Length: 330
Ligand code: BYC
Image (cartoon, rainbow, N blue to C red; front, side, top):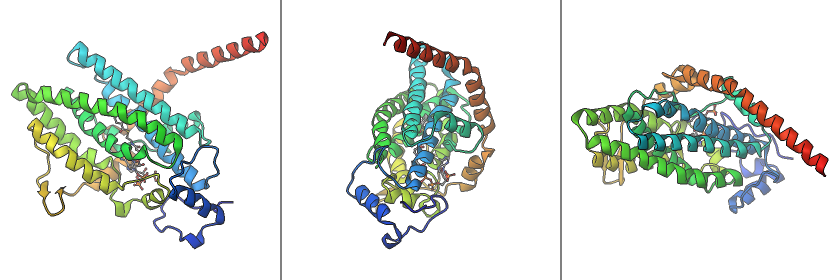
């Protein structure tokens, strides 16, 4: 049997000698890059870590539809409306793949949704900020989807098969989202002075929250060490954040926008951009539920769930009827 390994608040990793024979055998499979599949034997803490992360990811996709869905009726042209609608539908699809991947680990969709509505589980901090102007929709595509891709490309190689496979399609779709966001900003930045100012204002508000998406600094990340050992995480929070900054600064320059960080500077010695201190107090406040939109987001999700009850009931009734007909025919 696998020993119970606590997966939260643990920064010290067990030494190999402290692991049971089963845990050592499991780790050897991970080290050999064997994909772990749902029916495989796995330590309970590995299963719980994945359920936590995958459902947090799924909830982020679904809650992430809200700030953008809010703009579908106000998009400035039919083409922008259709593209935004397709993007928001894609996010729903990502949520579904991820809920399915989490279900293979023994949890249920109802339970995950219940936990989200009761505030027992998280979704990404980024979706607790408001979308005030059309430029915010471009900026979400550019920055938020850009950050999501940076984080998710390595997840395509993570140790859990269903999660890794789901990420391949998600990443392809996210890169379309990132381009549509950048295209909105290019149009605004080539437009009137007022449109360009709108784009700059959106960047000013979304820049720092987008850096927070990668999670706390490595030194404060409670799950990183164990998740790295299990190859759930292939790059650390700080490594991904640095890659994101390095990739995004030239894009801002191309748009002619200024990143709102006076300490941002190219460091030739490191071969990376240096950047200013993130306001981690703000991050923790958002995680505690005190961001600008936390209450709104959950209230909207609960209402959507309740309003959609009849659809779920009809689908279940239809499936039962069909099953009964098939049984009769057999
Ligand atoms: N927001 O030990 P750490 C998208 C929590 S979807 C909220 O580093 P871990 C998109 C963390 O859960 C984007 N909470 O944790 C969708 C932990 O708390 P608990 C979502 C955060 O798991 C629609 C604590 O802080 N992407 O992009 O090793 C439209 C300590 O952190 C955040 C994913 O979910 C945060 N930003 O690393 C457009 C990707 N950061 O659980 C775009 C998959 C940290 O102990 N997830 N926390 O209470 C991951 O890669 C990792 O879970 C994280 C955190 C890097 C996010």
